[in-house]
Amino acid sequence: MNITVIGGGNMGLTYALSIHKNFDEATIAIIEKDAEKITHLKNTTPFAIHTNENECLTNANIILLAVKPQASNLVFKNIAHLIKPNQLIISIMAGVTMESIKIGLNATKIVRAMPNLPAQVGRGVTGYLLSDTITLDEGLQIQQILSATGKAIKVFNEDAIDAITALSGSGPAYVFYFMNAMIEQAAAFGFNEKEAKSIILQTFLGTASLFEKSEDSAQLWIDRVTSKGGTTHAAVTSFKADQLNESIKKGVDQAFKRAKELAKI
Ligand SMILES: NC(=O)c1ccc[n+]([C@@H]2O[C@H](COP(=O)([O-])OP(=O)(O)OC[C@H]3O[C@@H](n4cnc5c(N)ncnc54)[C@H](OP(=O)(O)O)[C@@H]3O)[C@@H](O)[C@H]2O)c1
Image (cartoon, rainbow, N blue to C red; front, side):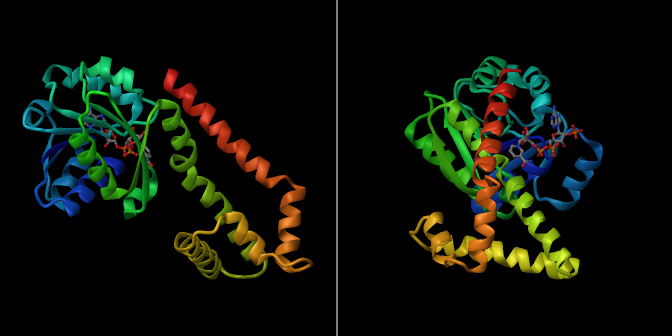
């Protein structure tokens, strides 16, 4: 497996390192333009680092597009003439549609994927959509590659990619938002920064772990912890009075709508 990653930033490097760790047979090259990053990548990774697309695209079976969405048109212009019909193009660029990749690269075998930040620690969620020319075997290979950074979930239309963007793509910020509010309240109770982080982090990790290991719904777990007239009941009653549930769903829906808008730009 010969992979070229275009864009050796946060995500491109995360994928390169995860694939390297999980696939002995993978040969990985990175194309990067930023001089500082090039030096860093050369000094700290085992990959071939290139600045020129001509040097390493022709041998690639898989090309991973990991530049910012606003750089996509320039990348398309630089590499379209080098793309061969049998090469698999995986794009993780947010908001760049299947159709625009198809037109921009004149390519047929395209994967539009939407990862999230925990990919950096191997616990990401990546939703992905395959173009209809991708074979069953290629689909399996893509599932394995994307699973190198966590869970990979196949979806069947771009609406679902926008939904994944709103749920797991932006999701880490929602979780941090909730954690931050609890850390602020821990500080208000007098805990120092280190203690507050430790209490809240362990609460999130422990709860996520419990949930992961059980078949029960989140609502059932809430009911289980909430005895009438108790402390949790007081908090949940206050959340309900403030319509926190509706507010969260509304926010996620706004993210979904924004994902759709950005895809049109
Ligand atoms: N970070 C996330 O959590 C996340 C989640 C989902 C999807 N994504 C998607 O992942 C993609 C990458 O995000 P990121 O956070 O990794 O961005 P990033 O850290 O900025 O990395 C992109 C890298 O590509 C380089 N680059 C720009 N144009 C290039 C070109 N023509 N050829 C080669 N390299 C080029 C950039 O250099 P310069 O800095 O010099 O421009 C930069 O080093 C984005 O499209 C984003 O939408 C990210």
